[in-house]
Length: 548
Image (cartoon, rainbow, N blue to C red):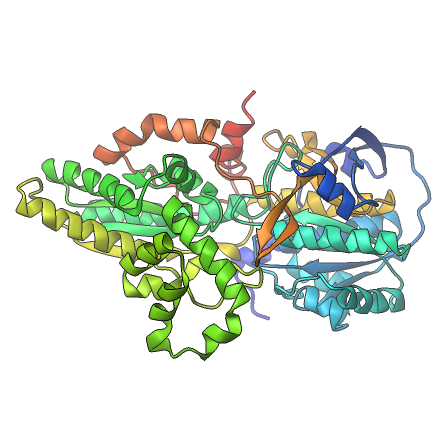
């Protein structure tokens, strides 16, 4: 395999660990008992063996003899920078506990567990992937673990390989599946522990115990570099408005973080749109006003950041999508038999009058995109909806109307971008390299402590890594009940942008000035070597949230 100069240099990087983990051996200190964030009785009823467990913190302890333990690992869902370092930390952790411990990777996600496709991850393999981006060491997949048949088929191979514990590295849905699996194996007394690790570039898997999901730092820095490049091009040519859609289907953390890093003219925050009950026309008008105001100063150019999931946060469209999700889940076979040319009319005839009217008013392309194949969780695949083109087209129409009315005298031309996959497999930043390694090492300690149904937790992350606090949080603590594919199911509650939180308040205090002024910031590429203030800064979101 040919390696770049950066890959060779990064292979030598030794991620930093919290002081307690670096010391060698730890003890698990139990904190307060926990309860779910909502729907306590329902969640407790579904998870009687793993509900209400205490928070865990690790502290330095005297050396104790540990037995060798075989561990399995799964990468689940979309890629996020640092996944390889979670596996590296897990490998080093179990080997430190006992050199005869083995790590098995299940191939292409949870499906590898069910289909008994695996490989042993040895030191030479692990060393090839340290501090690299991607999930290609074993691949990832989106198979949902939710049936007894799957649990039992998984248990067969775990038993065959004498695997004591399974680590599932994933986002909210994947960790929900991990908790369901932990509960099943605990109820059956199979003696298999299940531990989760918080992964998602979207940044929406967090709470007081999970300060940030891994990959968010690297992805936002990658996107911000590209946004800065576009802003510089924009300010050089001075003739285009760039509409940039960013990943984040359920929350606007990425868009907000990139706005704080690059200071664009407009950044739409989905949660604010929903809270203010803005219509699609309201969003379009707000952007058009900025375009018109800048045109008055002779600036017919600018940048607009748009979160991927915006369309779902517009209340009227959200109600439409909810009805579409339920209807298509219940009538998938009938819908599949309808000719494509007749699908739009068929949908309109089946919806409630209010939603039928909204659906009819949408451009045909967007309406069609709302009824495309669902993701494995039954949701609209919002990344397929070209929101950036929809908004720029509608802004253009509105400006044309204003021009006829004498309200606008500028020129409007647009360019479109979607930054998504570009950030998911970037080489992890120093922060993510350290954070992920610590999460994996912490998972090994949770296994040694006999825990199951926990998520690996590393806190105090705005301090130097030596001062980070590692431990575990019961996954049930983060759960509530939500409607999925027409049924109420337990899921980890997504963390949305808090409109009263420090990151959003910092943004709103400056956005009016950014709208009119050309006050762009150009962050440049991720720096792995150099001064700590350049190389080791966490995201602005994390810094603002953790300010004491």
